[in-house]
Length: 306
Ligand code: ADP
Ligand code: FRU
Image 1 (cartoon, rainbow, N blue to C red):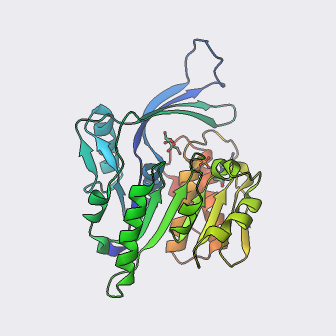
Image 2 (tube, helix red, strand yellow):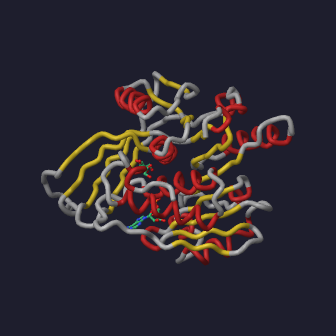
């Protein structure tokens, strides 16, 4: 790592997470105190960016950011993590998306209630203003309206076609179960799907999901599915199946952002030249370690690359 073109770009949502760690899952219509409370910068692409930065990978976040108090908090936090946000689109007129999140300290589960009033997505105009020579890997969080992302992917495809340019690897996270089309699976080099997305397509386990859905990939691409405490698996369009078990910490205290951590951990491994089997094992180790912590500070010390 080191030259400019080895920077990772994470494209997607950043939102304000209002996190409350609760003694147990709250009862409806009850009134109680939490154990601890904090504001956190959240959003899948933004969380993955934090993990890249924690592991010393040069990283940029591209998204839309409000200038309201939540947006100012998040901008400062990006700066503190040394994550570049110079190409983000800043808005005075829109409010930051917000999630209120209950962590059940009995089992580490996270219950998320998300609100996004009207924040626009990153547009093709925003994306095409980037200098693509700065990036070796671009990771997209697929948003419910993914038309702008398709135009951005087409822009990268044209860039990659010119042999004089640095070649950019594209990964896409497809998490939302509301995404009914599988078309998006044919648009990147490494596709990450969630158990929610797989379940919405009728699958009850990760192996069946990747065995069946990998036929939607373009040639040479790989589909990866993570499944909580079951671990993760991967399969390319015409290759073997790889499986990794999960690596649970002694105490699961907080599973918020486990998937975002798994994605960043797997990508870092692939960028370091590891094969797909080792990459998903490392992704699971890093994500498992993170489930034993309330934030990702010092994660790279607790779970160094092997
Ligand atoms: P998300 O956070 O997006 O729902 P998952 O639940 O699939 O994502 O978790 C991603 C990865 O994090 C899993 O593949 C696994 O390696 C790790 N992980 C998640 N929950 C646990 C857990 N309870 N114990 C151990 N590892 C876990
Ligand atoms: C975790 C997360 C949170 C955010 C929510 C948005 O994966 O990115 O940080 O509030 O999901 O759906």
